[in-house]
Structures are given as C-alpha cells and as structure tokens.
Amino acid sequence: MFRRFVLAAVIAALGQADRAAAQGNSGGNGNRGGGNQGGNGNRGNGSQGSNGHRGGSPSFGDPDRAIVQTGLSANPGFSVQPLPPGMRNRIARGKALPPGIARRSLPHGLLGQLPQRPGYSYAYVGATLLLIEVATGAVADILADVLLR
Figure: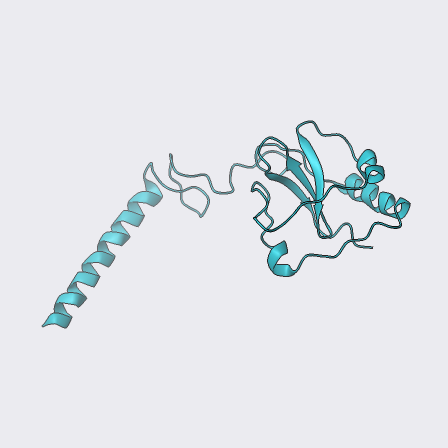
C-alpha cells in the first residue's frame, strides 16, 4: 500500500516537472544557452561579441603569439613551469582567477613589446599568458602554454 502511494507521488511529480520544463522552453522565461528559447531568461554563452568573446573585450591573436615567442628568445633567463591540469582547467574567460592561483608580472622587456590595451593588464600563470581586465580582475583572454620553450 505504501509503495503504491510513493510510486503514485513520484509519477505525479515527474508529470509536473515535464509540464514546467515544456512551459519554460517555449514561454517567455526560459534559459538561453542550452537550446532553450525563452525571452527573459539567462543568456548562457550566446552573448558573445564580434570577436568571439563576451562583451567585445580585446583578445589575443597570432601577432601576439609571435611577439611573445620573439620576446622569450630575448629573455633567456626567463623560464616557467606549466600548471597541473586540474589548476589549468580552473582558469576561464570572463571569470576572476580562482583562489590559490597567483598571477605574475611579465618581464619588462616582453611587456614593452606587447600592444597596450587600455583597461587591461598582462600577467602569466604557469606557462599561460593572460589578459586581465583591471577594473574587475576578470580574465579577458587566455594564450595557453605560449611561454613554454
């Protein structure tokens, strides 16, 4: 008897969840990003700027990679160790660096060769070069393992 009651309650709850999900996907309060088409919901990764990153923030390109490689050859004493994969995976665009991951300043010779981007600063973590928004501390772009020789 008790099992039938529990089973009936579970079936009823699943039916209500299906109706609520169907309403959220086609109504005005859904969540944009995971395939939902709501009008007033959160905007997952769909709110990216024209350069592929959120908010139109500056990003690294091939010229930046070439500048870093040239700058490394001019700074022979500069060496880094890559981060372990678990820590490397915690660094993400649009978010601040997680606690326990310290950013370091680039050598002045290399820093002077990179283009100045107002409101942003360069730093590195392990062998990864970061472009960080000064006002918020959020990572604007990542150039992974570019500092390895």
